[in-house]
Image (tube, rainbow, N blue to C red; front, side, top):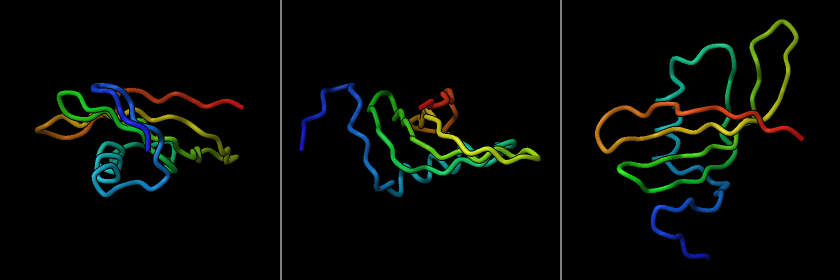
Length: 91
């Protein structure tokens, strides 16, 4: 197991922990237009926690497209997690 530098990102973990899952589901609870399924996540300890989720994306369109994206979420020490940004992953 590699050591994580203070403030650095962890490696991707393909087992989404309960804390990470809770942050993901809470941040995306009112999201419309696409369904995101977390496949893996990395984290970064800051004044709270930054998460980067590697996700499968299914867009809610007439012709369903499947894709991948990185969803960045910030979980403050106190309060609800928020989506920071969503970055498409291209082949």
